[in-house]
Amino acid sequence: MGPRFVGRLGLADAVTTANAALGFVAVVAVTVDVALAARVVLLAAIADGLDGLVARQFGSTPAGEHLDSLADVASFSVAPAFVVVVVARDAWGFETTAGLAAVAVGALFVAAGVVRLGLYTAYDTGNDHTEGVQTTLAATLLAAGVLAGIDAPGLVVGSAAVLTLLMVSTVEYPDLLPRDALAMGAVQAAAVAVPASFSRVFPKALLAWAVAYLLLSPRFYWRSA
Image 1 (cartoon, helix red, strand yellow):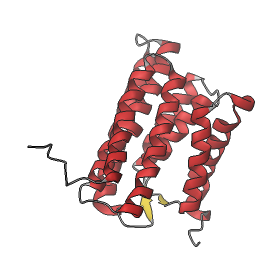
Image 2 (cartoon, rainbow, N blue to C red):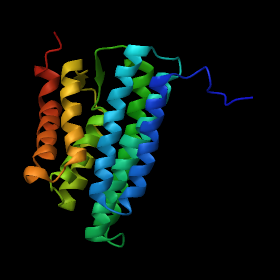
Image 3 (cartoon, rainbow, N blue to C red):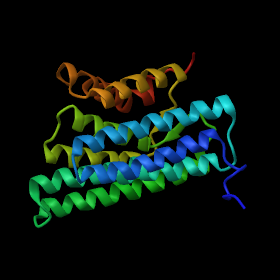
């Protein structure tokens, strides 16, 4: 007898599963180097975008949307929360009020991500928009910020706190057009491959793009081709 998933899961599901595995790798990487962990988070974001492309090309399975949300919990909730907490620990330690507050923010970030993903799977799948900031976007903002050289612990923790609130907000965020998702993926790939090149231009460009989408897309992003 073979594994239960044989014949039930497709190629897109394999990419999604790789995304989840990268989330675990990112958590382990935090114990070695925060910047390395941020690169792995961005690599997981690339996999997250790729599974959608693969699903459109080769088809999806009934398990696909559920696997996607489960994988995103690992890669875009737990992993970036670890990054935030380790940045705070290195600066403040866990014996201080600020350090304990950072742990609380990390825990709330994970909780908000789980709630947001659950609501997305239940209500937003198939729409051209979603309510609340996408977990992928929140993780990308935090990871790109680290790679762009933003290492002030107060700013990192504060950003995570704001994103926690936005993930469970009712603000509508439109889905990216395929051409824009592809362009973003190219910048993400460059930020992963050569984050320090040209005075960190690729992480900075990714961070600027993500901030622009966060602030402007609910009103100004046109989805017409």
